[in-house]
Length: 454
Image 1: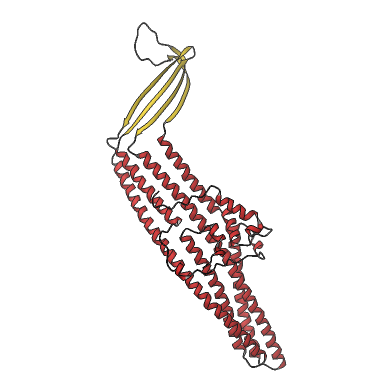
Image 2: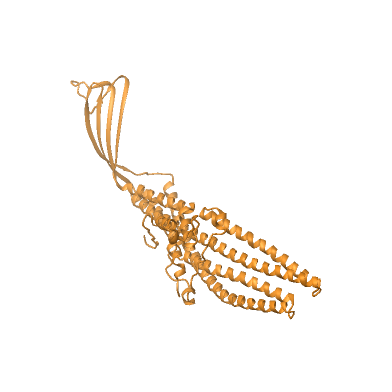
């Protein structure tokens, strides 16, 4: 079909990939408990167990079955009918085709009849062809919708996976900061007991520790929610993810020249689905217009008649039938007008989807460029704050620095680490979103994510 992206996968490919990824722990990256340890393993499991893909696959199979039904209209139809009837009074058994006073027709109280009928639509104005064309377009739309569902699930799984990794990083940074402030509180208390520092030093340390502990609870709850979301997608128990090893995907940076603009010829599933829907609507217009033309059918029959005590009589019939509604009260004109309006809407919707997809590619590209530049700046900030915190701590321990300077350095270090973790997540998420918009996001792409090189 012209203008429609065809992504025909061999039957069972997705399931085979999922089973291979899930059945082999070293290859799929899973723990003995079945919890994936890599993003590729998590995606494979999600594709295998999540109902969204199953629902889309069922819808695609339904469209294929509807296409088979539509194609059957091009074939002749053949039917068999039989009956046995008992009458109160004797009934004419065989058809009477003439009147002969010298021949008495056969009568019997029991009538047995069998009929073999065949028919074929010779001409219907193109209605069958239009409906077959529509069914084929809907098959393409169903396949594209299935690919859309897979890509959406992959992106959701990746979001949840990276969300857990990011939350874990924030909790680790938070715990490190809490441990440093615990030491500072103890040091300030010891100095206060020795009379070497005013009570203000201890109060400042305790206030800062309490604030950090409050932030820590927020970070831990965020981690809990992220684990729960991932567990629902993978259909595992949330507690199985508490200590499960999870590898962070590391995608090498692409040169800016390769990601500054969206490439031409987008083949996203959303575009393919919208274009297929528009083509199906156009076919519906052709089917509606065909109602203005007559229908011609050829018919053939073979009948067998018998009674309880009468020999069987057989005869055949053949003929043609033409149908044309002279007046339908405006139904045909209204149906054509409705179909044309639906086709116009579908064409406009296809253009909207193309525009939205291009915008999604541009937005994801810009987000990745921004995130990668933030990563570079934040890595420098983390290194600087780490050294500043170390120097301020040494100065504080030797009595040459101030507690407030060290606390500011620690706060800056934590904020930089948190921002760096989020920037790394944002860069990967933007790349995933761009791959989805371009129609590239599948299990194979996820498996090759860490192998991408400039």
